[in-house]
Length: 194
Image (cartoon, rainbow, N blue to C red; front, side, top):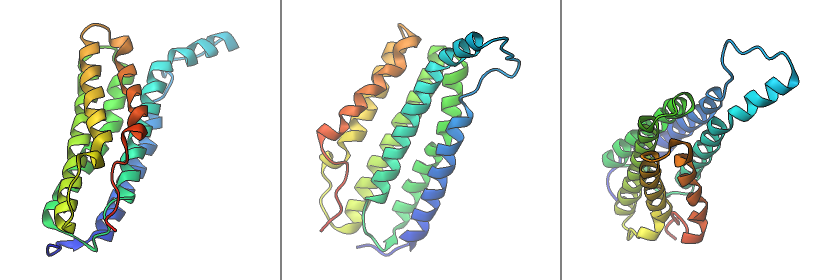
């Protein structure tokens, strides 16, 4: 084990707060236009149906962030965080805080660059999570196994697929993230050292 920069519980507390705040902000992006004033129930129902793309982005983003948070909670049992671990966790939390903005762009603009930004954010989230896994394994003196982060490899693949689909049809690009529901089949993201 390496010398620690700070108690890991402090880093975990910061992470919990960032995840809670980011996940709460996501729902703010599921909104009807400010000038919307339905005259009847049918108009309201149609407006809600028109939010289906934004709501899908909300559900996908919430589930992905929840997965990242669960992985962090189930993560390593190090008593202290090394400098490298602190910095990679902070980088990861930076990309977590960008998710509400990325989701806002997806919800408002039906253009390929919106998908690219969102998917780029997902890729960077996954890469920093893999980095956390690598550094945690090193600091704990255990072997890093790719199966520990197989769900993140799948997330990167689905983000790349989403970018490719957006080149042809933005309307279907977010559906690429549904393949992430196969992550439990691929194995655990991380198992603490015994």
